[in-house]
Length: 310
Length: 139
Image (cartoon, rainbow over all chains, first blue to last red; front, top):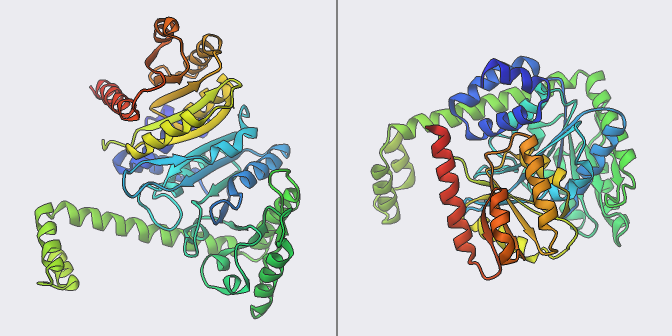
């Protein structure tokens, strides 16, 4: 991208933003150039992650949350991630379907992303897409993960505020005390609150929070009820996002989170780059040969890895 | 530059709610290795062009069964042009009477796929056309 395109990106021109995100997804030199050109202008947006199991209503909730911010005049960028097929490499990106209320509004930019083989609930380029939206002046960036299981917790490293969305009847109090996704919530939202079992779900989540030893000045995630299809409870949720932001600022935790995020991103990129460099130096036939030997139990997998690296 | 997966917007303009065909095609293109942004029914020309722009798609695929294509398609093409998306591949399907096909192609739709078309043919057509466009851009 030339400097003119970067200027357009910073002005929020949708074409420039869209192209930049595509470049990020492709990766390589042009992605790096863009990051180099824009990184100084990032770090301003409040990044809000929205995660939870498939079908809990994440996209519909994102749609409603975005509408609230728009009423306040804040510009909203949205990155919505859906899974790539491990078989065909294709994907159905269907989150946008739930966000039609936002169309025709220049203050909103929605981008759907496929995971393209990445684990953890996000695509490899999601954090770079967020950088683009941040640099383009979107004050709130909402990142919707894939329908998450128990262990898709990448979002917590990428967002300032993480919302975990539950639906009534999705699990008992044992599910609530398990490690993983339940631990990363800054806000817990029980969506579809017009359904049965909502009070049981809320009670299970509250019980889990009560079990956590209290430290001074700790943030206790609120357990909120919403009905995203009608917008009920969403104003309250947006209020709580603001409270969480204020809490982070008052306790200088934004800096702590930012450093953790930078460290995680740095490590990830080093890993990716080392892997790429290593594989460039190895011919595919050697890997195939090792795979054969491992399968035939002639070589153990650690020894095979050693032969590749060493 | 590495080739990215082909990105396709599948949308239904107009007011008919019959989206089974669009879903079948979306699913088939997924299985052909494409990233399909599915926006579903009741899409206005403005919504379609905006989604195509933000999602930076290679292809816009429209399904229409209501007969409103003669009215809606030119408006969609105009919206895409206005957003400088002239190089996006346009395909359509649904109920397009044979007599209308030349006019629809004239508007810029490279492929018109009526009932009975094999989804593999649609995927193959899109793949070949996008490869050509990408080749032309790289040259």
